[in-house]
Length: 454
Image (tube, rainbow, N blue to C red):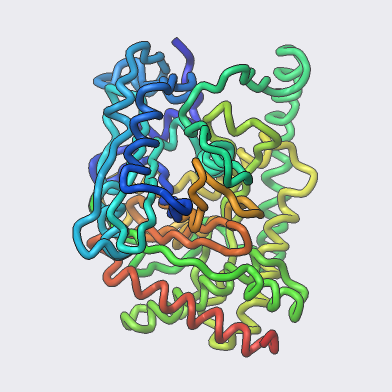
């Protein structure tokens, strides 16, 4: 048995049929030269037969039918890998469109709490002789940053290697990472000091946010079509753009790549809402997660995420001025966290996201102002070509969580000179989700022209 931290158990407590609380990712691969028709099947069979799952992937709630299920972890000593790792094929004609439809269906279904909370699907049948791997893991087990790092650890930069380990595997000679530095007493003393100093920290941050109008406050975002009660079904859309397209704009404006990403998303959201005659006069607010993990801490699982609120300036028609406002807002949000310990960042971030805990109460999401309008998350990924058993990684598309009052999520990751966007939306509340991809492309082009970054 293992005590479940509150930051993990809250994701189990919040989960319902309408609110699956897992994060996911779709990886797209090109088979190596000379790969036969049984290439994917042979990898799948080999992993099923040889693999022993790491402890993290054996964890499950101790008792899923009562409150102990949200308080204690236990370990599954008879893990059925053939249940967790599956092999599927796309219907004809095997386009990316069919792959995204299948991913949407998988991402909208709950994980079985009587088993460790993860699944991996090997997908064959793509018309261009590629294959895909879709994985989902409950947010109580891993946050999105940790999940991506574990995925990266399963890859290699050597295309000749044919014995790669899967993310869930226990690797020979791999020692578990140690948590934190110093003795237990030292860590407890540090934690007590952080908590004691949080009151003045929160007052200072609130005062600065009110003084700097570029930093949004919680519960001040306008109501939009994304901020409604949602159903359990999901749509998933994905596409990649060259990082260099974003870097040209950063060089022309002195902003960061993340600023340009947010401005591109803001332009797409503005056009999408105009298309649906639903653009509010007040600017949208995004919650931007910030990882607090260092080194190999991802292997320990759990959650360590801060949250910055950012003004998306969707009321500004000029793309260049919109970017300038977003950059100022992001800079102001970072200054609020300056000099704080990771625990104090978590506590301060909780002030931004805690209103979401009220969203499951009937009527709250539909009749109150949202804490923010959506989550936009940018997760660092591999910087060079990566391979899995000789197959080249072509794309990594994150699939995230939607909640009541948060019907849309945009998460992206860098991958060998590309930015891979994954957009997750409630199937009922966000119609024609795939048009967001067209709007992203348009917004990036308009931003390039407006800033003279051609």
